[in-house]
Length: 264
Image 1 (tube, rainbow, N blue to C red):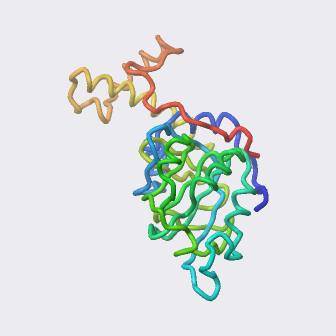
Image 2: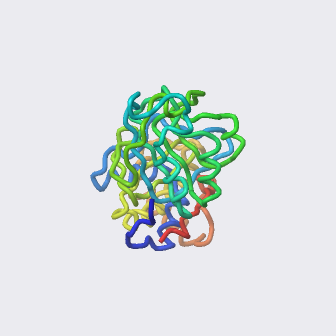
Image 3: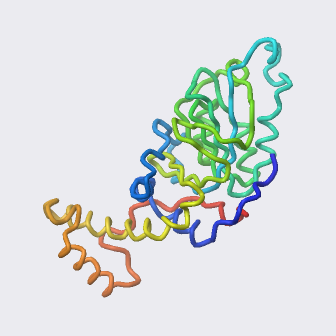
């Protein structure tokens, strides 16, 4: 696995995407015709993860077959692409695994995930399962999966490809796409749309924090959410008077790890 040869994403775009929730990004993408970019069913392993932002590096599994993947030693099958993928990760990369939604064996375990973290990766994501769930939860590195299992990968999977378009949890992921994770899950932002939506997403967060404070204060949804022209005018007046402040109630998304400043 070598570095992706793609145009760089500006630092302010990374910073903007790191500030907003997956829900906000889903709304912004919906407005641009991307209807279902969220990796449904994937959750963070453990409770120490606020999220991440980084660029996709992909891995594709196919079913293992006995004549190709010897079963005598799961660590010496001759299928070493998984190791090549991890050792090829760069700062800000997210390793995304197409496990075909199969949780009968693990996509990776503690050793490979720890090495990915040490390589500077931003996250490790699979629509399958991980091994060593307790260890991963303590690691504090962003890992997202459908399940935890003790079964080793070669029992079910053969690594077929690296850095090719894949499907993960029913969503197309291309190498270089931007992935954003939070405590709710992971969303895929097409790289070509990242700069277009980062600023509007930050502004949407500000507005919706303002509206949330109003609803919590007892105001009705009518005229508040979605906001009427009068409510939008009151928001802009508040923003003008408090240019450096967050809206009432503070920012909604948690601060998230962002290794993407090193991404080329």
